Amino acid sequence: MKKMYLIGLSILALASCSPTNDDLQNFESPNLSAAKDASLQSRFGFIGSQPSIVWVKGTIPPKPIYGFYSSHMNKHLYSPFSMANMLPRTQPGQYYYFLDRFLGSAKGEGQEITGWFNEINEDYVITTNPSEFNGQNGWRKNDNFGNSYTGTEEGSYPIYRYFRNSTKSHFYTKDFNELGNGKEGFVYEGISFYLKECEPENIRIRDGQFYQDNNTKAYYIVFEGKVRHIESIETIRRVFDFKGDPRGNGQPKEYLISKVNIDDIKGERGLPIIPTALIYQDVDTGIMYFSDPQSNGRGGSNLKKIPNTTVFNRYRFNTDHIVKTRGINNPRINDIEITY
Image (cartoon, rainbow, N blue to C red):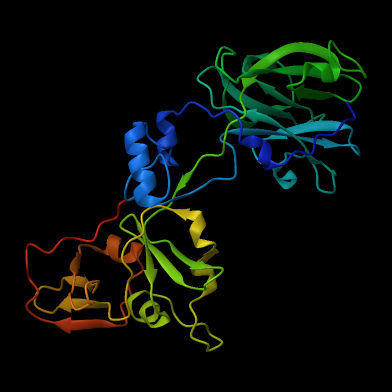
């Protein structure tokens, strides 16, 4: 039992999990044919997504259950978060819990798995049967972990439950050989539920996110489902609403722009937003337009209508440098869209 399992996230890239409808909120790759997959890989450099989707590979497994141990308390606690400061407690002070193990992902279609904390003895129970606490004092529901697998799915495995009365502590493991039928004061209570080790899910990125590449220091925006390079700092100052740093160096406020390795941001690359891009407003109609000159000698102009304040605010367009004009009213001009 003293054996500690300090695990890294690298072990999470094992068996993949079955998608559910809820996964689409974060972005789960759709079921594409092999030919379509190959086409996407060729065009955009990634597999299993659609055109006009921008995403980043996740690092956190779906619906995780982490185990923590404190030699100071001689107790185990469990959480959907990998940080000890998220654990339940009854009083301030140091508890000295550290991450002991990753049990697996609760992304099945079986019974709901919940976590219960006892405010009297600080025991923690993970269960699919909350009625076991009926008539008992001190228990409160602390976490919703997800749903158990049935045990028949490929890659699923049982989680074994133990209890040590002397320390009022429950313990869970996926390795039956760790405690077997019970030892070191722990009594075996049976299989509690089933989990799997799932790959971290890809996370879809919303339009209007701004990035700066760590290597080149170049700026980018996710615009209508494409990653577009903003070619100059002047464009950011003029077209987008990034006020200069109060120290006077003119750089955008860093908290508004995420610093990344831009190659980690996957998806279709759009044409660059070049320095001559502008925001126009037709003074007769009040309608605003984004003038986005692009390619073929850069002599052309691509006007797109900013249809409402929601779109204006999502892309952080700048109200300070709007060029007033007349005669743009053209019903064939397309609206700027928010794709996600």
